Length: 127
Image 1 (spheres, rainbow, N blue to C red):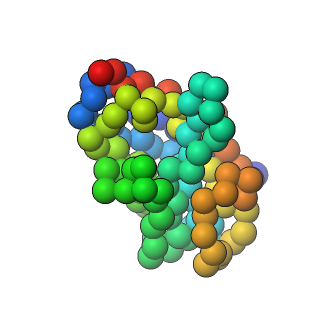
Image 2: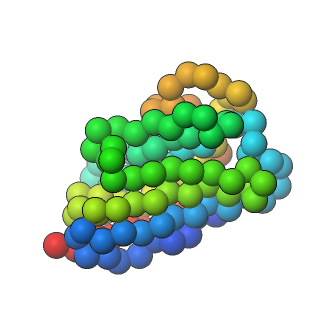
Image 3: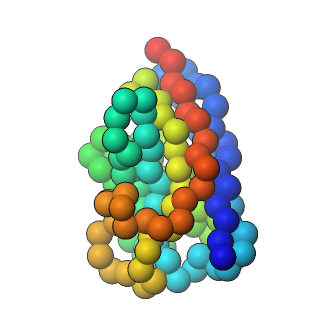
């Protein structure tokens, strides 16, 4: 139905920036909220950012608020995550995912509420 492909990960020094992209093929993502989530070794999967289906609202945990920005271009069926002021604790595999409910107005922070996932892209931040 839909395939998600993340790109843009890599190695960066602390304080640097990266821009992740999530390109979708198949059906349009335009009616679904989209999120970025990450998983570091030995830790549970963690919510990073979400954007409403129409781009009107965004959500971030305190750990990344002010440093990360999620955006989307529904015409290109693509979601982005701009990451700035990166810290070593940001090191993780970053996943793009689609929220399970179309036109949702609820919060988006629960990883279990995302039902389509990309394969992830590694982000490593060195000291």
